[in-house]
Length: 266
Image (tube, rainbow, N blue to C red; front, top):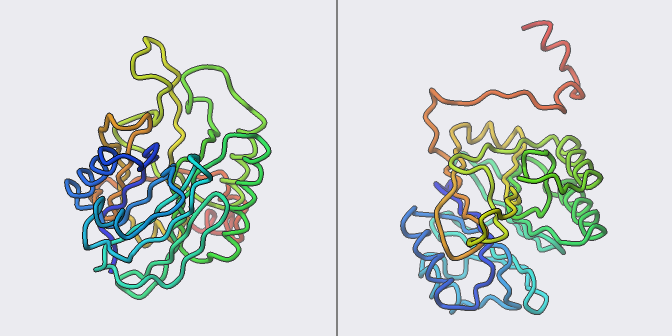
């Protein structure tokens, strides 16, 4: 069975009951079926944690990347009605789960938490390339990338253009499309009190062409929350009216076999 909504959020720690409660409010309010949390800051996710934060429908249906001390950590959890996942894997900067769609087609979800250092960022992008060679077919990649690839992703000119170029090459080489975010331009703020904070779009959702063809009515929106400096992202797989389906040109299209022939025949 297909999930109806997926929550993607850098929660900045699940150590407090208040933060877990904030997750529960969003999950219950929007009837979220899959939860992808980054920066959990906990080395072990127990059944008790899942039950108290998400409820019995998520019991024993989760996988996680442990934090290193109080840094990092990823959790993917899903409702029991989605069935048993086909496969899962945990890597250095990501965790992945393979779901089965209602028509029997399998697709991968990879939840990421990008590192801070430049050398680690390079390793992170290589890890995603390596994952893609194993996780074939429809692919959804979501989370806090800690990277940007366009000038407009940040509200000032303090840009690492070399790293932006690496990220842009990854997007093109992987032939993935970034889902447009509705309701907010930036997803992270350096301060909630400063008159001129740094604002950056660090949290994103990418998908392969095969995945978007499976879920053409998907819609990515931002949610309101004062519990983290990152805003929660809510991906509805059937939330976009068919009359408003989008079209955009991707830079990697001309490199695909048969592209020019298809254009000429159109």
